[in-house]
Image (cartoon, rainbow, N blue to C red; front, side, top):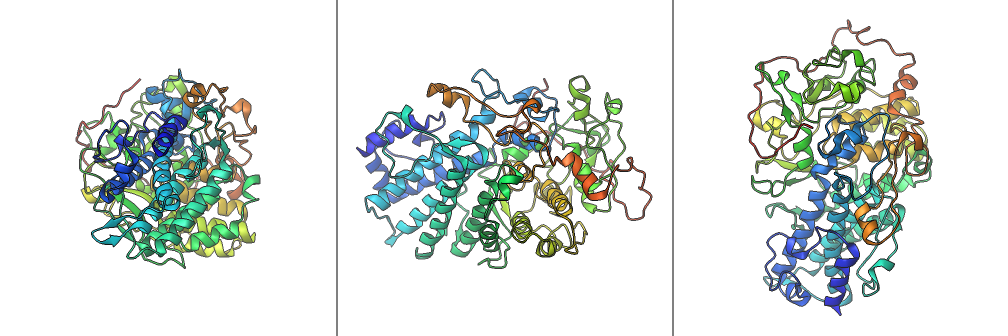
Length: 594
């Protein structure tokens, strides 16, 4: 019956990537239909199975397809038809095409496959230990609780991301009867998925606390390991993130238990109740061949069409959106002036009191941006901070999945939302890179390692008094999410934050539908979200507090024209020199201009 249940699970989850043989280095007889007992009878095979689940889930968190949600949050821009990037950056917002004929269906299905596969593997292990009483002994040491804690944790992470990304998904566990007709399974709403995810993560910490000499040691890179105290910090950060991310609008956010979210975040990375001092949760790359690497960052920081005058003559393949400059210089426009978009990008550089404008390279080279498609999507910037000489694969690089800064931002937000005043939120922000703090990372960013920059982060120098209005704190939080933790939290980090404060543009999807390929196989009606004509409908942002209008609430309107107040001393400008050479091309990926 166990083997039958496993075979039905493969049908139920209907994921093209779901097959146990895809787990890294799993060596058992008959990889096409692995015998459950053969896999679980050997602890080394069990750990390899668990390692495969971790690789699939966390590779899904930083998949190259995560570029699309990044554009929905106006973190990046494009007019490129390759992978239909333009569809996700387009303004006014388009309705998402969730049909199987869409050329970029993986934009919606990539996470579905990765997360459901991880859940399937976790359920096998949880079932064996909890229901069958199986024990795992490695070199004479009982590692049963270590295996169980890691299985609960990866299932919680996978469930959490399904709940963050989709409106609904399967909610199956080790007790689900999988022998029934697969098409009879119903989807559960995102709220139930996230509640189950948080339960799993909290349970994982409890089980890990009972495990002798616990180690989180089944990450993609076998050299990675975290002890119990470190694991507890990481786990509580994720529990806080998922709990806050449950809200799809400001109205939903108002109903969340922000006191509980604050309690979780306080026990998270860098929190006042943290058990360790680690600054982040970063997994190391596997090899230099792209086996496990940050594909999201790789695709977002590729530069093209370089001239002869160094890095500033290049253009970003998926350059940063104009929002980024606007968040550092509120005088800067929220929409690119069409008359300045053409063979060159003619808008003058932003200027700011915040030194983090140095994170970006100013260029007049538009690269692949096409003004005939939408001149308002132009930009003059790409990232210097996350530049990796067009290659994010070297083994010395890391995949940063969660930082203590993101956890601090959750703490600040939860303080504001739970108390209704900005006093505690202001103090937390002042201690982060928004004020006097500096981003600390366990593995230096590639640009730092290579020598393009000599820091991982800078201090913004802002000071909050605790008397700020809600829009002022929202602006501060949005700036930090947009600038400071850009690309340091995997898929959708900014998207999830913005939707719960109604900061997304009108018509932006608040989440994805169940992938069309899944609906088609189940013979269920296709549906989708997004489109400016559907603004305010369930699943589609109203734009009532769009970031494009937020500056006027905070600083008063109308805003000055660009550069009107730029004579003040101490203004910073982005990198504009030519002393940094243009990149070498490793050839590890083929990009297309369409």
